[in-house]
Image (cartoon, rainbow, N blue to C red; front, top):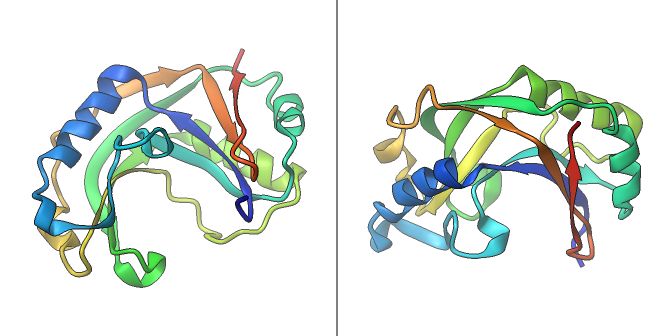
Length: 169
């Protein structure tokens, strides 16, 4: 079991494939052990809405999001979190602009018991885990920048690995 439950939005197939293609373009020798986005169902291209939920009950999140409409996200340039933060290498990511995601993050944090492991919310889509110090080689790529999509569900990932998709209506 995991320590916390979380919520995320999965990128739609066309955008997910673009993120996976970017990850696949990274030479194997630059990768840290956690590898690339899209290698397993757990690493499908996504943007975390809120991590650190204490509840294992998807229904609590479903009730909270019952009146929420679909959300819009816009991809930006690539950047990275340095190794010191994750301990698993530099995290290469695509930055995401979405007032909707900020609103949902705040709504969940205020209504449910959470542990804020990252108090400042910075929406992003993980691309790959790189060996420490290699993030600077891959930051600043704007090939995904400006792509905007509407997403109609939030995925709840329970501490027990249960996955529940919650429609936004």
